[in-house]
Length: 183
Ligand SMILES: CC(C)(COP(=O)(O)OP(=O)(O)OC[C@H]1O[C@@H](n2cnc3c(N)ncnc32)[C@H](O)[C@@H]1OP(=O)(O)O)[C@@H](O)C(=O)NCCC(=O)NCCS
Image (cartoon, rainbow, N blue to C red; front, side, top):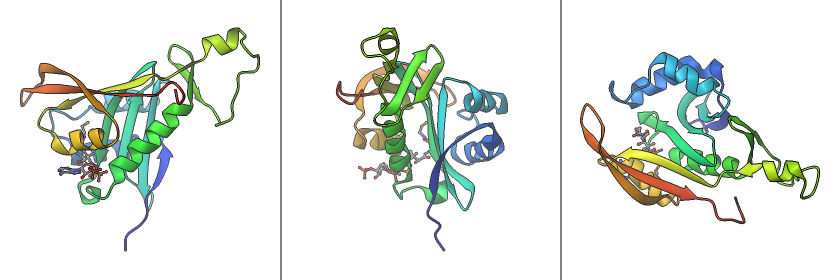
């Protein structure tokens, strides 16, 4: 029986599921430690979405939110790969980031589609900012991930020599830019 996953915002309560998922997806050298994952799931500038099938975490995506948002990770459990799950999570994250309003460094909220600042052209409106672009690094040999980003609107913008270790490898830098009417 195939169970349709649901996407939910992740919290610290998902820490152990995230540790297990990371262990299945990433090599030891690319994996985050338990303390790094705890930070990722609890810091106020982070947003993580998980895909849960029968309450089991089968995929996740996470960002550090700022005007230039960083895509921190995306991963799908091997038995769920190749079914469009990463694309679905990435699209859901893009949709959410369009609604993000940054009110101070490290503080944001997710606005309803029709949200307007309470005072037109006032101080509040000026101080509330939207995410402008997403940046990420990816191993130059990681074809599935590069394909995922390319087919979801990311552009190649650079290369960082020997960015990764064990094995040493260049990073490709990619970006997604929100157009002015959506960002
Ligand atoms: C990269 C990853 C997240 C893709 O997840 P997925 O759910 O299998 O991806 P999708 O099914 O949504 O496919 C997305 C695109 O990638 C392509 N793709 C997926 N797996 C592929 C593979 N093995 N080889 C080539 N292309 C592949 C798909 O064809 C699709 O492209 P399309 O939209 O042009 O058809 C998954 O392979 C993974 O978890 N890898 C290990 C972790 C990792 O490397 N994360 C990224 C770095 S942080």
